[in-house]
Length: 249
Ligand SMILES: [Fe+2]
Image (tube, rainbow, N blue to C red; front, top):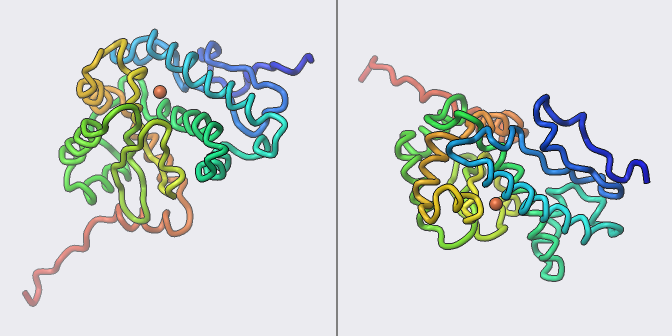
């Protein structure tokens, strides 16, 4: 049993060793959750307590329960995104779906934030935002409205759908992965994400995400990884509009 709980130290950046989680035997297809910064790095916006509870008492528990449900079954052979797509439409497997989706959703949520983040977008996603929403301010306004209009637990997503950006909300463990969208950014709207720091002021939490946390490099990295028609559409959408010649007008 020497290797049954081997710590994945090789995947951890220096200084992040406390965030390493055991990868247990018989669960090879789905990586252990990992936060790409230290628990206190998002302070004062997101407290260390919030991040510790959120990561260890929610995502980690989802991961452990998922492991318990799929170990020894053919589901254990699937990558996390394939597991989510396969179980979403089968009511008998919805327990697995919910846990797997929560692990996947949180993986993107952690990467959607960074210390001293926030502010206007940059890079290709900035051009796509201007094309789809007209301006960053309009995008931010629609982002706040989407979050404010969502009732109960869930998520707000910036996604790449066919050939344009879209803002979508999903309830509970819902994830855009099962709709064929490419998720670029995730914001957790469950109360456990903000209640210790903002109490019931969800709008203030959403504002802080936009102004002090969001990591646009996350969206740009995912856009850069698109392939095929999605990549061609994204590149075309970031090109400046053609100049209209004044000749002959
Ligand atoms: Fe959460």
